[in-house]
Image 1 (cartoon, rainbow, N blue to C red):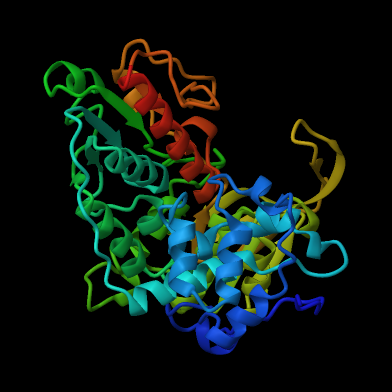
Image 2: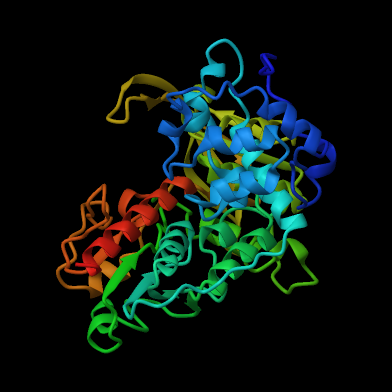
Length: 463
């Protein structure tokens, strides 16, 4: 008999006033008993509506049923049939708007905690099982993957399993892309990411770091000089957007990319053990309302800032961040300055930011996104004392690849134009997916694009 309790098993967590002073993982994970109990809430629906919301088609009812039987390793293997990064997805995938949003149990209560169960079985596997991965027989064909984020890693893994010789080219000194430089340690421990990458290497995937495609090597050279049969571009959206207002070049004004990269990939949170200091001062303003803004604000708090503000021009209802991330930020003491927008930054004689002028906003008619457009309230300006500003209002793809690759169509946002189902671009044998095509989106959508492109590349090269 299914467990008909209406609510999920709560996720065990560090207390807010403890975790906001460390970079240890916030959630500590289900116990075996909690996982089985939660799995028993699943009705194992015949039409499997939850799967309709999963971009990588995880066989959700099947892996959950295995948990009810105590077969945690079997559940892990079931997920791995379609998802290359279950430990990652179980932590950062927005299940509430995807698989869990389709769960029948959510009609009269809370949906089954699919993400929490995925994380549990991935963590159980890592703790109890030594991976035995055999390198597949090679088919004699080569594929280059640009970018080692979730999209590139997924494409690389799927292609390697099919026998392709895959090399991943990464611009940074460490593989992992946004999983390493963007998402904080307290949400996604880096050793988990590196464990997943290690497994890809066992499949035969080669990873070349410190290689900037479009500068170190051109896309055309991958074909002409290096003999690749196809190229997959999964280089993400790493170019930060700014507001273009007075004082934006002052010291102490960071892009979210720089701020989080210094903290995460360069281990600024371990200073002085690692020589990457990240100055935050007493008062920090983070501009934006997405997941990146929440990550930056929560990181600043952990680095010792007394007051951390999320400054967002719409109301709480319009915040694009995951509800869980907003809730965690509020618990940890982040102050939300909603319906406010910066108009200029103020600096001292030494060139450091010391303040920020903001104006109150009110919501007018809906804009192209469907959200009500924020409108300034005249005469409502005020000055905030600020030591550090983090601009987290979005990212676009780096223009380097599109500017150095002939025959590759891009749109007005600078994103590569690619077929939604296959990732095929306007350039022969070149595929693309993830944020470089869609603009900044989610890890799981990028993974779905990598999986679709790998399938399409195989179909093309197998003809």
